[in-house]
Image (tube, rainbow, N blue to C red; front, side, top):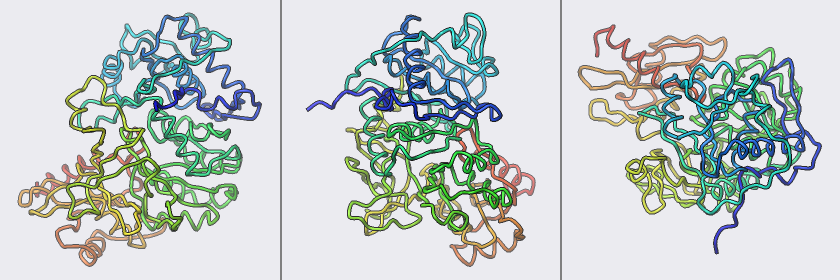
Length: 506
């Protein structure tokens, strides 16, 4: 039987007549905008009608180049209702990269923040948020009801782009059926309801934020939308809006914990779940978060844009309790194989499920490398325990060789973070004349703690194979973040390479 056709733009349509708050927009923190489901739905319909009036047809690409704001969501859902494909563009990219994405996608029109228009080519057809005249966003919309396009089983819903850390960004083709399946799974497995209020501070061009918005709105919950991650605004929003769900990457939570006085004076009792993804989390970080919010459940996530994105649930099929460092148990309809590992319970994760991408836009050779018979090679190494719980080990691409020994940075980082004084650690390869590469570590200490480079090395030698100990240790106040709020390993590798050149070991 063919899958039931549903438009991803209608993910919150069941609440279209509700006057309950859907979105609290903090794009201008001093002027918050609270919008009901009814008003949001009307704006989304108006945007869809505007696209049709402008001559766009189903399948046409619509670029969005903006920080998180209400209008971003209106374009996102409105484009999908019109059968168009939203292309979410990283606002931190260079003009060359932004223009490449717009050209590669063949975007017919781009909706942009005023201060980001400069990133676009001169001939780009633009609609400007907060703009005036012919290109003004409000003038583009055509108020009135709109009947959403009914997509086919493989019609594209969204085209996010990968970060491009190993080359040009690649457009990922995600279809309506797979993404509607994904939202259904998340709402069910995470027991989400109309009582929930989630905060979105990760950029909306990234899968984490996109999923969090849709899965919160789908059951009728509220979304608090921050333009970008601002640690003080994030913490103050917990009490002000009675947030029930926090989302972020480990570095964001670590920055929160550094705001000890503000946290101590903030009522966090409404928080029932803290969701953490995109990078491994240390036991120390988990302990401190749990101490601060003992009533909240901490859930580690695993996902990949091309793969669903989310593959694993916080619940076990047999009701078994989840180990705190596990990233989950397979969702229904998710098939998993672990390949090229030391045994059948560790290796590179391959998956087949309804949410897997159809391929990369205009890249048949890259698609063929990643997909085979519907199975996606994620490039991520995971481990499975005897109960079927999965644990993230690291990226296969991050593995490097020192003196003939394989080093997985995640293993070394986890070991270092067991030290009571270390909040976070990142390990990267540095060039070395004798061993090709050796580990260098960047360490964030817990507040009030002191540690020397030699003490870190001795701890590593006592708790891991000698070849894995970091040859240099750099203490930093915070780890650099890339555009997706993941740790910028590329920047740290550059710093490590410069240090190796300076001390003559490269």
